[in-house]
Image (cartoon, rainbow, N blue to C red; front, side):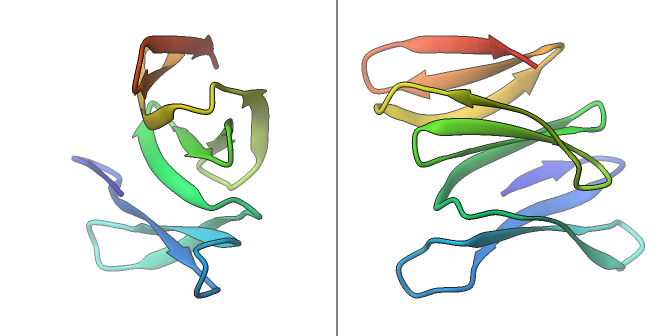
Length: 103
């Protein structure tokens, strides 16, 4: 999940018991909820900033806009455990290192 002051809360929900095929939902500050993206990923982490949502799962990062349109996809190290957007990069926290991809 990620919490953003003006855009609300972003959550990942799995449709299956094994955690695969996740949907990303945005719960707005006014109480409205909407599905942003339907993925085939097992989501580990997500981060929102400046109308971009980065989703980490299955050894890749996928970037979406607020309309749920996929804006890019990058393969990442197998040890990545978290993603955080800062400016125009998605920073990836791994067990052995921190890396980034330009989004």
